[in-house]
Amino acid sequence: MLRHLLILSLLWPAVACFVQAEEFLLEIVDETGQPLPARVRVRDKSGADHLPSDALQVPLGLDQWFVTAGSSKLTVPSGPLEIRVEHGLEFLPHKSATLIKPNQKAKHRITLNRWVDMLEQGYKCGENHLHVPLPELAPQLVAEGLDFGTSLHWWNAKRFSTPLAGGYIRDLKFAGKLVPTSVFDYEIEHDWGAVYVVGQPTPLEDENDSSIPNLPILQRSHDTGALVCYQGGWSREVLLDALLGTVDVVNICNNNFLRHAYQPRSRYSNLLEVPGFPIYANNADDMLRMNTETYYRLLNCGLRLAAGAGSATGPKLSPVGYNRTYVRMEDKTSYEEFLERWRAGQNFVTNGPMLKLQADDRYHPGDTIDLENSSNTLLVNVTVHSPHPITSLEIILNGQVVHQATTAELDATELDEITIKVPIEIKAGAWLAARCTAKDQLLSDEELAAYEWGKPKMPRQPTRLKFAHTSPIYINVNGHGVRVEQSILEAKAMLKAFTKFSRQETSEATLDQLERALSKARKRLANGNF
Image (cartoon, rainbow, N blue to C red; front, side, top):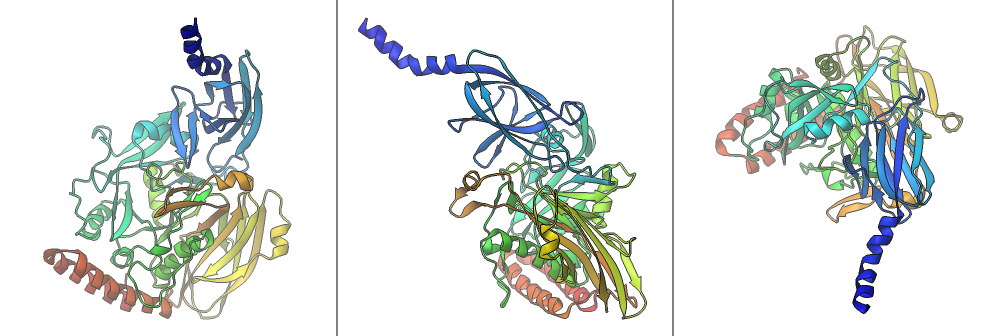
């Protein structure tokens, strides 16, 4: 008898847990009542997350989310549950609680509300940095509302066994929805700089060799029409490759920013150790400044580079498309057209707000304005929509703020929408862009504090910062584009420091080729002929 009691006492926790488990049907619909694929987190009062047995799991920080096609069955304990649901950036995130009663089958329906429809406004979205195999990628692309996808099947080595049959652009399908996706894309990530190549027509066959710069491989891909995207303007090799015409995109909205978190990476401030360059502090605002100001330095040299966005989902615990680009597509539908328009800079990047820029009611990002004299005024119109309170809205000319929304304008918004229309004086060749920030208030301070994880050398810290940035409008005056002398001097210093770096990193045979490339880049920088 005693032995039986002992066995029963050992089994009791499991038996009790089993008795408390309840069937739970969760339905996600849009405002018309149609099933909506989404990313979901279901959490009980103990802090444990629950997933359907057959669902695709999506870890974000320390959370365990899953993808639903619109309807999912779970087994959960009775008692209170917290439910969070998200579908990309264009639907308001949902957060609520429900009570599961003992011995009852529970059914719960959640309606996600769309706050903006960018397709109606002529935009389609994608990103450039996804380390997700195709079977897992399709559900996430659909659940996050992306129009186009990418799969980096090579990352310093072959990562995914993507079949050759079917071509390099394929329609990935989930819940009846198709997302055109390029499947032979790749990332090179060494001390030279991390770079993503999207729309690569054939699998990369090169061996991984960290002593060889990115340039030779990128030139081959660029010649085929692939889109070349650098992780940041602070990458060691980005200036050289951009001067030689092999870079299309520089990420502003990059994987230093994750859902509810950012990466403190002050050490990226000055990787080439150029004397006098700024060092950015390890806070979210300065990590954004590092991304933008190093991008501005490149633009100020006269380079035309579109703003980029990528999330690094896979290695980084962040949703697919958390950082994304919206490209003006009008009636265009093809993936190839999407890449070409992104290359041309007809886009903005965001992880929250939706941002539009116009000049003289007809010029948009990616356009060139030709002016014939040195005394001109452009009427600049900027509109931002945001589900989060907007904290700043600025017009940027050659890297400098030339107009910002007032505190009164920022405070007088509902579901936030701000439009500013102001004259901007143009005296010489320039580039013009808009940027904004917003504050995510979905989580309490206590909830937000949980989004801190990682090793001491690779930490993630909580943040409420959201932001958006347009690609530039380019302005020629008397046939001349932008040439900011301070940025030219800084670029020359970067090339000098890069020469020193490359002589330490590469082989003698490669160095000869690299020296020729550097000589060509210096000449192009000096005369502005790109």
